[in-house]
View 1 (cartoon, rainbow, N blue to C red):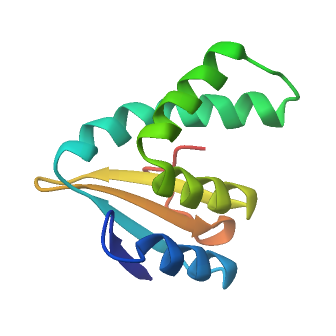
View 2 (tube, helix red, strand yellow; view 1 turned 120 degrees about the vertical axis):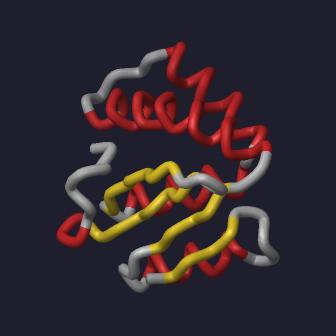
Amino acid sequence: MLMLEYGAKNFDKAAWEAIDRRESVQLLVKGGKRATVKRALEYYREYFDARRRGQRKRGAWWKFGWYGFRMPAFWAVYNHAELAGMRVATEERDDCLVVTFSPANLAPRSESMH
């Protein structure tokens, strides 16, 4: 499993390549971005769930766009993982928020968001 800190140099490129290889990736989100990602993950999941059902929910789209503009590299990685069929799980730790992208057959069950 590849573990990367959000905001580290070329973290998005490394995560993207790992997702292309179908490897699990953990992004560690620290500091002020932690609260933003935690709030935004709910909206992003809502957007993708609606999209899968063929719905276009304007409210979800606007929320997704707002957070996407604030953290574009994170959302690019999330989008790539989602489109690659990976599962997303989160874990709250004392010092960071851990967002894990795993191939569907390796996804953690207890924290899975989908």
